[in-house]
Image (cartoon, rainbow, N blue to C red; front, side, top):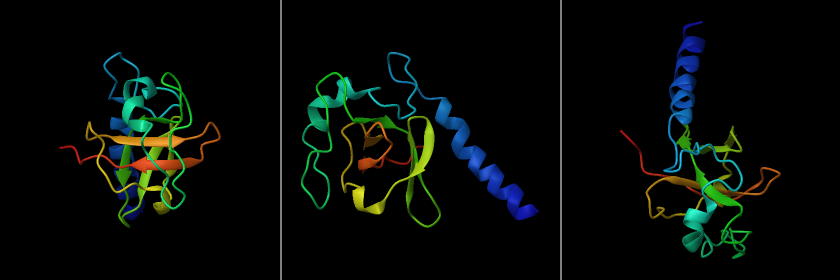
Length: 125
């Protein structure tokens, strides 16, 4: 029972802060399609999918697949990210080995939720 309580506490520690951060315009950073894309399109358009070289960014300067999100690493070193408001495991094969210009996490995922590319952010204190 104690392990279950600890697991629940850890999940809540990650989930609760996820609703607290907002973009400068007040839009919550929850990984919803199109939110925050326009502000970052200039560098999103240069991202390439690992293994294929296809663009991560499927869209124009206003709307597209890439957007800022919240993410955390699990105890086994894999990432989980908010995609359209839901925590989702990030396939290791789509993780880009780079840091975003703003140091935050970003995800490129279609409307179906399929993740094309992911950039993990710097740990926050």
